Length: 277
Image (cartoon, rainbow, N blue to C red):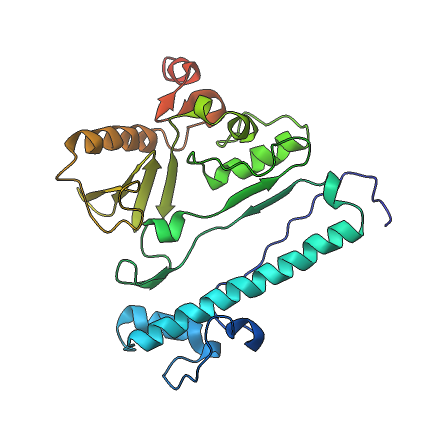
């Protein structure tokens, strides 16, 4: 292909599997194989999920299962399209010399904490998203890193993979060293902010959710991965630890540069130099 020897960058943004949840029949059949006669209409799911959240559209267990099946089918349909893109890279002879990163902006809730869709909180079903890197010859294949990272780390990682310097103005940091040495980057953290509704801080086994004046919830994702049991009254030391990290990070949020400051759970010398100026 013309220009194939030159460095290239492709940003492929897909709206699926956002609403509307209207997958093709062959994908829905993988998750729903019986008639459905309830009120949910795939072409109207964008409006209907809003009505469900407002309480003006009542749904039963079957309706909820159908909505989730539509969403799962949307994911599978999107995966199939991505597979076609990967095959195009292989056909063009670019796959084995390309770094491919897959990331998502958020997940959707299906009544995990009493709601549906997204934009209502910072629980794991909404903010725990994939961050997958394939970089032949640069990163080990098949390795799973459990350390918490943030979407802001994407741009610095891309620059590092391309052999380019990461500007000091970037708040994120490259994940290359972390992918090679997970222990050396610990403890780390991931902060999520859902506009003015909630902030979530994940560090190690714990997630702290701040969703209102003096309202903080603590969850242990090691023992309770679906965050069903709130522990702020039972784990005072863990709560204090997470509150300290949260307070430090939020206070310096607009200034924090992870490349030089480290994380708020594991600050580096650059942090002390910066605040001492």
